[in-house]
Image 1: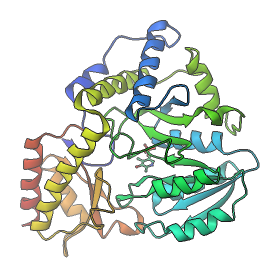
Image 2 (image 1 turned 180 degrees about the horizontal axis):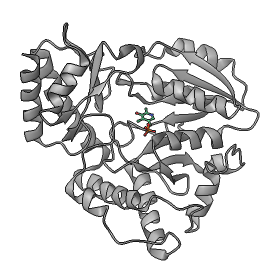
Image 3 (image 1 turned 30 degrees about the horizontal axis):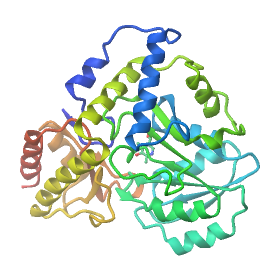
Image 4 (image 1 turned 90 degrees about the vertical axis):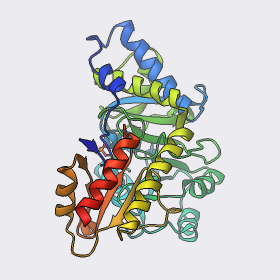
Length: 355
Ligand SMILES: *Cc1c(COP(=O)(O)O)cnc(C)c1O
């Protein structure tokens, strides 16, 4: 079965094999070697300096990393402006409100572009100790948000920018320094091709000067301090760490994020062209969409359930739209181990299902 949902992904043989490496105690040097290797490889993805940035590892899904980032890095008493244009931006708002953080939202319809004039208008009214949270790739619709313009504007005003990069890290450009990205939460099991259970936050070390933790388990500064001195506060998901380490080696061998970006682009073009030939159009223009996932309009008279089942019986799992989009569209993500042969079979499966 080939998974075309936005994580977890179909594993390569070498990542799958890493899951069965030897049992390990998380208080032994072998574990700390593994942890150090992963942290350093994660910084290498975007060529970040270990003196300025830290990769902080967590056990949990992508939301755990987003939650840890919000619960730990918004200054106490400071405001958080959340930019919403999909499910995941709205999730950040729910997380922040759960912790009693003083929030404001700049809301757009799902799939709509973030308007920079509207953002600037809100940014100018924010007090100096405020933070901004935004999703990079809104997986709800495939929209790739322009975190460069938004980040640069925040950087110029000394405002922290907290990014949900869960479905873009490793495949889309993220220039932490120039774009003023203070922290970015992501996971092992999307563009990096690991398994669920390991997640992380890349953060600017300057943010750790004061503790703002509102949660004991999700205190990022605590994780970072422990990991910096070859420790870990709690029992980590060791098999998921093994798999992430192997996935990162595979990622480096393949040529890093730029190579993955090109690979996804080629896959996505091939499938989008084929779907267009069957009369199925993409929801967003290619310039607005990520390369990781695209949303397509369901053809008239075809239900999602029919299309899903027809493809599943041919070995492929596609993904439904969320909320109000569930009846109108379907999504295809092309992360993970997908061979040219699989793509050929996928095109045939779509043709068979639609005709
Ligand atoms: C997948 C995803 C998440 C996290 O989902 P989990 O189910 O917790 O892994 C968060 N944000 C975005 C943008 C995502 O695509």
